[in-house]
Each structure stands twice: as structure tokens, then as C-alpha cells.
Image 1 (tube, rainbow, N blue to C red):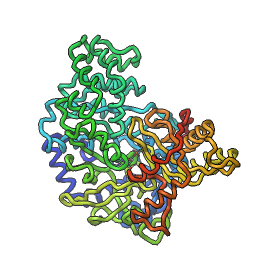
Image 2 (cartoon, protein in one colour):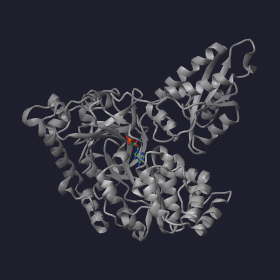
Image 3 (cartoon, helix red, strand yellow):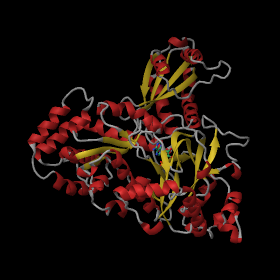
Image 4 (tube, protein in one colour):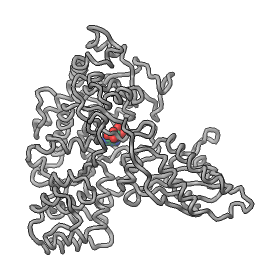
Amino acid sequence: MDGKKLEYKGEEALKEIEKLTNNGAEIQESLLKQILTQNRETEYLNKYVKGDEKTDIAEFKRCVPVSSYEEIFSYIQRIANGEDSSIITGQPITEMLISSGTSGGEPKMMPTIAEDLDRRTFLYNLITPIISKYIPGLDEGKGMFLNFVKSEMSTTPCGLPVRTVLTSYYKSKHFKCRTRDPWNDFTSPDQTVLCNDVNQSMHCQLLAGLIQRHKVLRLGAVFASAFLRAISFLERNWQSLCDDIRRGELSSFVTDPGCCSAMSSVLSSPNPDLADEISEICSHKCWKGILLKIWPKAKYIEAVITGSMAQYIPALEHYSGGKLPLVASMYASSECYFGVNLKPLSDPADVAFTLLPNMCYFEFLPLGQNGTLLMDFEEGHVPNDKLVDLKNVKLGCFYEILVTTFAGLYRYRVGDVLQVVRFYNKAPQFRFICRRNVVISIDSDKTSEEDLHKSVTEAKKLLKPLDALLVDYTSYPDTSSVPGHYILYWEILHCGSKGSGEPLDTNVLQECCSVVEEQLDYVYRHLRNDKSIGPLEIRVVEPGTFEALMDLSISNGASVNQYKTPRCIKSSKAFNLLNSRVNASFFSPRVPSWGSKLC
Ligand code: AMP
């Protein structure tokens, strides 16, 4: 990055934002030129542009095609198997980042180079100064951020680490050797974040947060789902956490050496008074507003609360008693970090992100209102000249975002649909609308309609020997308890002699749940093993339920001719209708197998 300056504090950070939002077009152009210059000898660019024209922006736009994972997969695979990074990038690829997107059921691997960590750190360092503009005094206490690493997925055959982008960051010197100033002062010791065992990590991080409860000014986690998981852990384990505080000793189930050593200084002596205070608060039956009771100085909760995470807003409001602003600070992915929210106190429904022009080269594919392709080309064949760049996006319009990165992605379709909702200086600000092709999601899983359909198709084969068939189905992401789980509503027709009065075979229906889970993609199965998603449930509904669902939709204005059963229901009316007709419910009896070929 320019001059390698990563740490902008206070006013300096805000000035940097002014610069980036006033000069986005120039910064983008010079960044693309740098990418093309650094990567000019790559096999990828050579395939499309020749000679001196390789660094020419107009030639790049004319000749280099729009790409998606399917197109770059062979390059990723070759690098994973030991070929030189120079087939796609001018700098060595240091890690493969596991994205929550999947391809053919397998996780996508995104290439990354060492200096990408500088870019991510730069973006992280802007966040607290932005929030401080609206909430003063944040340097007078600590942040309780519940961050976790995921155990190392594996390495590629040639030995490159395969990890999530957050694990990569927490394990980097950028995180471990950060300046320990009040902006970066967290209650969780680094070793507890770096612990691979999520229960031990959670126990220690919550313990550290409870012990320092009067210093905590900021609460959060990367995703709203993770923050709620922490509250649920606290609900189940506050007695054991209080015991630790009372005795001044860590529970014996915590054996991770890093956690034990780090917690010895946090939990240095018995504190029965503090244990009594926390017990008193936690023993109340209703946990509405609990957060401010435990952490009375907290000023906000920071987490991703947009996109599929918006479903967790009511739960966050419940635990905060509606008294803590929910701050959506950033928008990022494994491919590239994108931008920040310059109005951190805006209502969650109004959150818009400003893309930072020094992260990567952004382009945009214009879309229709509902995220559909606008034009006369097919999904897999987007013509180059249909893309617009950052300076040419229009207010109110919908786009899919594409990135060109130093690490070797070229005009790569990220799959997110954004809408331009306003401008700050000359920079457009984007509302996150949705992930293309995602029908149901609980955590970072992104199940498409097609994947759901394939899984149900496989599972319903088990009904055949019972002389029964699946009439119709839909799904619902149930996040009313933690962890959330998928519910499938199935209407089953019994063709056998006993008709629909026939009792349902529990083993078969449980097996159906299990088969659906086995067929869902890698990320879903991983999150199930990780207990971030609970067992899938099938609710068998009365005959005629899906007709009633159609009637409901039509009474709400849907056209009879075009009616299609929604594969995931959103409205509370539809949810209530389905639930009022449930005959029986079955849960998956085991976690699905989880493993990956990773090239
Ligand atoms: P991953 O590739 O697993 O890191 O996931 C990145 C994806 O998560 C993005 O492409 C978005 O679909 C989603 N995401 C990340 N940040 C946000 C945000 N602030 N709001 C909504 N969705 C987000």
C-alpha cells in the first residue's frame, strides 16, 4: 500500500477518509494501473492482452473477461498443487482463504498475498475513529469483542495454509503486534482469541469481559449470530463463570495452554463480591436488557447486522433493551475488504457502505430491482462492456459488485447485490441488498434454491418405500433459539391403502433430515459440526397446507398465473399459517459428515 501507513488515528483517520472519498476516481485508476503493472507477466493476463497493451486500462476493459469462480478454479487448483503464483499474480500467494461461498459443494479458495493484510489492517483502523466522531470517550475504556479463529482447515497439497480470512488476520503480526492504545484495548487476551477450541475460547473471553465489566465501553463480534451465540453461552454457563470468579481459578475444562497462561493474570485472585453481583443479574428469569446490566458503561454493539444477519436485530434489541445502538461498521469478504459505514449510528435499515478506493479495483454489473440480470445475456456470459466503474454508478440503481485484486482476481463476480443510496463527497454509498442466489442462511452458510432443491430431492426418495410422496415444501431459518436451525415444511401425500391417516415413520423422517444435511454444502456441514447451526428439522404439515399458502399469497396480491411456492418463507403470516398446520416434527439425529477435498 502507498507508503505502508496503516495506523490512522482520530482526526488523521477522518482526513484520510475525506481524501479517499474526494479522489476515488483517480485513486481507482492509479490502483488498476499498479495491479496491471505488477501482474503484467501473469499467464492469466497474457492470455487476453499482449505486449505493451498489458498495462493499458482501456485494453484491460476491452479484452479481459468477467470471471466467476468456475473460470478461475483451474488456476487456483494449479497453485494449490504447487505451480508458481505468477500464473495469476506478480507477488507470492501466501495463503488460500476459505470463503463462505461454495462451488460444487466445496468451499471456494481465494488467493491472498502478504500485503493484503496491510489493506485489511488499514480498513480496521478507520473504524473506531469513525465511530468516535459520533460516540465520544471510547478511549476511556475497553472493547469486549468476541472473536474466534477456526481450527486450521488444512494446507493445500503444496503446503499453503487454508484458513478463513479472520483466522488469517488474528494469526498475523498485524493483529498480534498492534499498537496497544485505547482503540485497540480489548478485554479478551489475544491467546483466548487464538484458541482453537471454541468452548474454551468463549468461556475465557466471557470471563475476561465479566471481570472487566466496568471498563467495557464497546460490545461486539464480527457477525450478529456470533454475538448472540455468546449471550446464549452466558445464559447456559453463567454459574460456572461466576464460580471461576468466586474462586479466582479457571474451570478445569479449560486446558489450552495459551488460555490458561493468559487468564492467570486476568483472574488473579478470588472475587466473591463480583461473583455475587453477576449472579444476581444473571439469575433473573427475563434477560431483556441484560447487556446494560452486566456492562453498564457499554455504548453500542458492533457487528454485521445487514444482509442475512438482519434477522438477528430483534434478538439484539431484546438483550440490549433497545438502549444500545447497533453499529454495522464494515463490509468485507475473503476476496477483498470493501468498505466502511461512515454513519455508524444510522438505523440498521439505512446502513450504507462507502467502498474504499484503495482496496481493489471495483466494477459493477447493472441489475434490475430484484437483483436479476437486466439485459439480453445469459448468467454465465456477461459482456465486458456492460460493466460500469465506481465513478459512474447512479443513485438508486442496483448492481452486482466485481473486483480486480493484486492477488489475482480479475473482474471477479463477488455475488453481492448492492444499491447506490447516497453519496458522500464524490463517493457513492451502497446498501447491501442480498447475496445472489441465496435462499436460506443462518450463519455464514449461503444455501441456494438449487442446493436446497437437490438436497430435498435426494431425501424424498426415502418416502417412496412408504408409498408416500412429497407434494411440496418450503423452508424457514429459525433463529428464535441459539444456534438457529433450518426448518423444512413438508406436505406428504400417502398413496397407500391407509391414506393420509397413516402414522409417519419417525426413523424415516429423521433419516430424511439427515440426508438433506448430508447433501447441503461444505459450509453448512462445517457450521453444523461447529455447532453454529442446530439440527435440521422437518415439520410435516396437514394435506392442503400449500394450497392455503398459495391462497394467502394471492390474497396479498400475488398473481395466480405466476405463483411459485417460495422455497423460503419470510412473512410472519405465512410462518403462522404453516405452524398452525403442523402434524409432527422431526430432527436430524446426527451431525453431517464434514471434510473437503481442497483440490
Ligand atoms: P466470505 O467470503 O465468507 O468472507 O463472506 C463474504 C460475504 O459476506 C460478502 O460477500 C457478503 O455477502 C457477506 N457480508 C460481508 N459483510 C457484510 C455486511 N456488512 N453486510 C451484509 N453482508 C455482508
